[in-house]
Image (cartoon, rainbow, N blue to C red):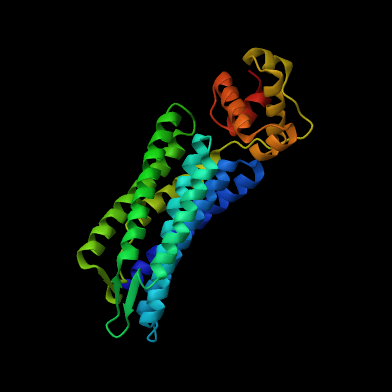
Length: 309
């Protein structure tokens, strides 16, 4: 049974790698920051799945698999779990274009580093090597409490983003991400309740099934199809929005400059630096442009500029 689970996990990871490769290639071609943030999130979760497979493989096939190695790998897994939550938060925060989004993301990242230190500290967890048991301490519960708060915040922001994107072409993409994140959230709650009941973890439980791998695989298949069917408008340095387009949507001169920079593949940070304005101002201009044109992303803006009103 354990070998079947390992084979299943490898198949899921293969699907994930295919979807991740498409996301990274598309992010590089379009220079879309949201896709870059998503690629980081999806890559971290894929790495987490790989660690699950490694733990199962070592437990089943390596006779010299020690409790110390299990303890260390379990700690790395927990840190990756924290990182996935922070990456999800960062993705949703950036997608909402909050005024102090970067500072909020940085605060959650700093908290994650502190919690990671707690996990590996004597106050976080201790190993009883002879019994192959990890005993959880106060530091572990503090870290898990922070993770629960961060994960809940990510789910709320994700649902809010879904409500905003519901009438756009990105609805299915965001819906899939929210469902995928929700499955992981429920699994985290169940895991927390189990840990709270026993206050420990045993090496003999390493053959468990990661239920969030099911929505991960389904979402991966969806992403492969979604990215393959997504029309990509490449940045073109010697192109400008037409006068007809500018007149049709009432685009101001400053907004025209912003659109031109987007067509050249510039990021929000590069646009702010080159036009000598703040990042918040760039985001405000883009929001106004999207509203005027009736779109919700860089993809649609590039496509609309090139096809006309």
